[in-house]
Image (cartoon, rainbow, N blue to C red; front, side, top):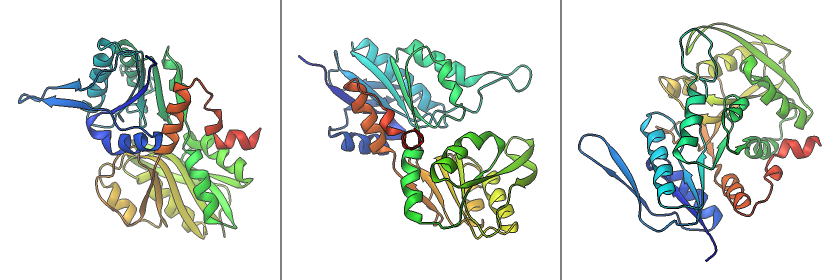
Length: 315
């Protein structure tokens, strides 16, 4: 009997896993997470997965139960003799803890890479890691998908004549430069200094934005403080409009309030994390089709290079 593809979902990513399964053309697999009165839980596969290509979809945003559930699903799949186990992690949590930036701290993203491998994952599929070098923390293959495949076609439909791309901080410049190169457009940088986590002390704009339609690009929108302050400063410097594109809508704290009260025309995000509430300025685009193609190519041992739009344009 030939192995087949089976796609399963953790509890809090079912909304996305269902769309991925629909785009792939197979029903979502049946897994039940039993919950006990003391708060513990246990995932149970309700169908045979022996010898199959198993894809487990779960973003590891807070709380950490999401990560633990994924690990337990990987372990259960391994013990059920799955042929090949891929952890599909659209949003890879703890990615911002990728180095020792102060004494006596954990490198949590390396720890997560270790425990995913130890649990039994054969491959990881994710999107827009906060630091691309996190791929090097793994000793198993990592398919690192790029949201530019979704955002670039969207930006093309906007038909902005005075297009300029902006990086909300120095750390995002490489990502923004790829967009600017694709569109043959200018880019500027908003340089920030932090007092502490989620609190900005000062910010300045490097580059000319007067009379330009600005597209801000970032991978994570957390409290939206950086994003909204960048947008305000760009408008003060003469920008005609400011629209933001962020892959992962963490949106914690006063994020929704900050976005609603900002000068942003809109914030376009992916559905790697579910929104906690509706906001008129937030538009969601789906990554489901992109992941479905990547899953099919993995199963058929085909390259995923065609999924990287900017790479194809820049060859």
